[in-house]
Image (cartoon, rainbow, N blue to C red; front, side, top):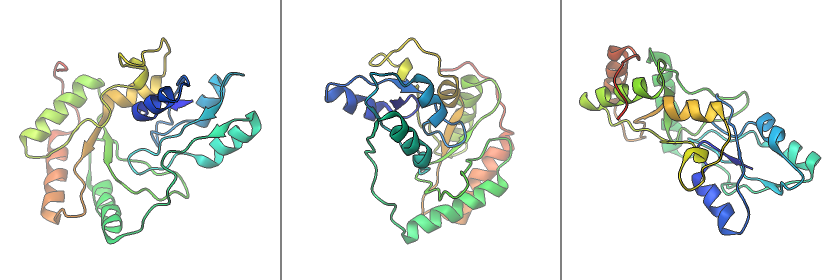
Length: 211
């Protein structure tokens, strides 16, 4: 079992060892595997669960491990190393908090209770009409000097390499709405303010045909 959003590399590794990746939907708040979605598609042929800790937010390993134990499955965690606490990591969290309280018109990252987000990427949702609004917002921010980018261009089950005839609405919605804003430990307050000013000035909603 592999997450459909952000799980392309893991899916490739699964296939490389002769197994078949099966895609499950994500929790829309963490962007990581949703344990309930995984359980809904587990079969007798399922061998393992391969979570992905995305954008610095860990997957729900407590619930996934409980599910694996109950269904006799393995957990294959390719990113199981403990997080490193550094000055840069602390600064990223501080800067993320700065953005959290100032951004308007976009959906800021959410953090599960008891979890420490590393903010390796600061990923927001651009509300509105899905991909057309998100892509228009991205182009407008770049025109204002904000180096944003789309973190996951397509869910894995919609790519040519792993195409699967399944409907995973949260993964598909996340691919259409998410945008990563710049967040580096080396940024200055002036640069952070520029990000806030540009986002808030656009209001979060734009309409433009998707490129």
